[in-house]
Image (cartoon, rainbow, N blue to C red):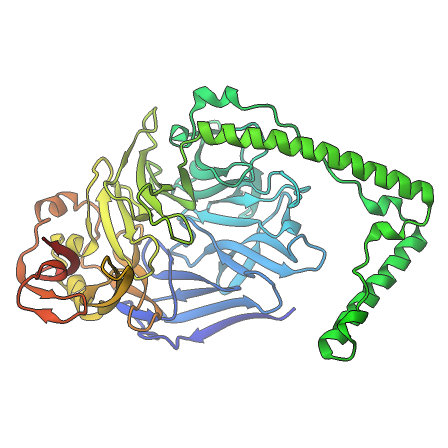
Length: 577
C-alpha cells in the first residue's frame, strides 16, 4: 500500500506565515476549523488536507491505492485547538464490501491513529464526525457486522468514543430505533455533531427507501445513560395516518445457484467465464470477429445433476411468483406512503449543533411548486430550521428564505446560512435564533465596526460574474455579465468567534479558494449591533443592461442595479414596467 503523509511548505497564496492573518488560499475549500481559528481542514478526493496557520505547515494525507476517500475529516466540530482532527482512515482490501476497510480515526501530531471499533470496518463506512474541545469524547457511526448492501438492512448506527482514566478511547454504541417510521429497517442512523461537554449529540435517520431523512437527538443523563428522541417528524410525515400503511413483508430472496453446483460444475463455469473475457479482449483488439464471441456464461447452465437442475428451476419459478406478489404489495405501500408524507425531507448530512448544546440548525428541503418543469432535476426549496434543544417541545423558528443552506450555529444563537444553494459562487448570511431575518455577513462585520474585514472583502472578493437570465422573447437564457458582484462564499466562524473561514468558487476562472479573515473582535454577542445598524449608507447606484453595458437610468424590462454602500457592493436584477 502506498501511503503519503507529507508536511508541505505551503505552495498556496498567503502561505508560510509565522503568525495568522487574513488571506486567500487557492485550490482548497477549508470547511473544518478549530475553535481558535488556527487549524483548518479540507476533504479532498481520496485525501485530507490539514493546515496549522500559526506555522504555515500543512499535511496532505492520501492513500493512492484506495478506490474511495482514504482519509476523511468528520462533518461536525471535527478540529480542536491542539490540532486534532477526527474522521476516518480507509485501506484498500479486495475482501471488503466496497473494496476498503474503514476505521474511525483521528489525526494529531502528524499521525493518524485508529480508534477502537465495535463492528463494520469491512463495510468501508466507519467514521468519527465530531470531537469535544478537550478531546475527551467523539461521536460518529459504524456499520453493523452483518451489513449487506444488497438488502434492506441498517448500514450505519451511532457510536461515541470516550477517553478513560488511562488516556485511551473506549467505544460505545448509542441507543437507536431499530425501525424507521414505516416499520422497516432504516438505512442510516448517525451521530453528526457533539456539544462541548460531550453530553448532547444530534444526528439523522435515513428511512428504508432513502428518500426521507429526519433528525434525532441523543442526551446523556447524570447517571451516564444515553437516550434518544426523534423531533420535527411532523414536517416529514403525518403520524396519525401511519396506521394506513398496508403490510409489507420482507422481499423474497432468489435461490443461490452455487448451492446446486458441484465442484466440477463450478470449475467448468470458471473456465467458461475466463474464456469469454479472453475472447472479448480479442474482439476489442481486432484479433477476433465479434460474431465469434461466445454467449456470456450463466451459472445455472453448468448444473450437471438433472435433479439439482430441476430443483433450482423450481425454486427460481417459486421466487419469481413470490417476488411479483411482493412488488404488487410494494406498489400499494409506496402509493399510501406518498399520501401520508409531506414531500419534504431534512437535508442529509446537514446537521449543526452549537457548542453549548442549546441550539441546532438543520435544513428542510421540499420540491418547488413553481420550479422549472424542464429542469433535469426537480428544483427544491430549502428552509433553515433553528431548534431550541432546551425546550420541552424542541421548538424551532425558520428563516424567511427558501434558497439557503445552513453551515453552523453558535452559543448565542447566531447561525450562518449560504445562498444560492446550487451555486458555489454563493454568499454568506447570518441570523439569530428566534428571528426570521438574515443579513449579509458583511453587514455583521460593519455593525461590529470591523472595517478591516469589510475592506478585505471589498478588495479581494468582488468579481464580474456571468449569470443566465431567461428571455421571454427568444425562449432562451441570455448570458449576462454582472459587474462588481461581492462573493462572501460558504462561510462559518470559529467557535470562539474570532475567525471567519469561507470557501468559494471564483466566477472568473471557476477556481476554488478559501478566504480566512481574522476579526478585530469576536462576533459573539453583537446581535443588537446588527439589528441597530442593519441599514447601509448608499454611496452611489449604477445601472446596466442585460449585456452588462452601463446605462444612465433603468430602462423598461429587466436591468441590473449595482449599489455601492459603506458596507460593500450589492448587485441585483430588477424589472421596470
